Image 1 (spheres, rainbow, N blue to C red):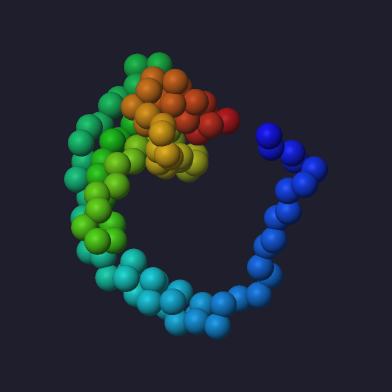
Image 2: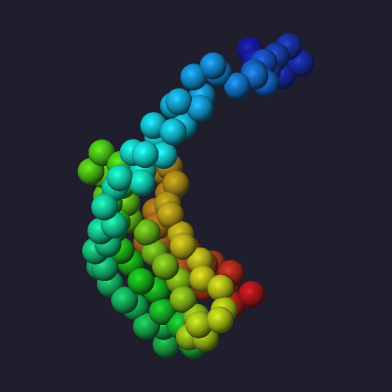
Length: 105
């Protein structure tokens, strides 16, 4: 059995000695990725929200990242870029509704 009262969580509060070197290497790797975007779909919303752009962009080690950009018609209003997480489904209609409501708010 699992007892929450006996669990200990040890968190390191010191920065590893090689942190700055590893961080600089990672930043260079990210900055060296060419900007390459492949637009998959532009969905104009009939409900007055604006439009949703589905796209892929290149990332580290040749990975392609799928994302959606939610735009209002008025360019001065905010946008939401939505990326799916582990075990989620980005193309579910509820996600579109939720993100467009965030932009509208």
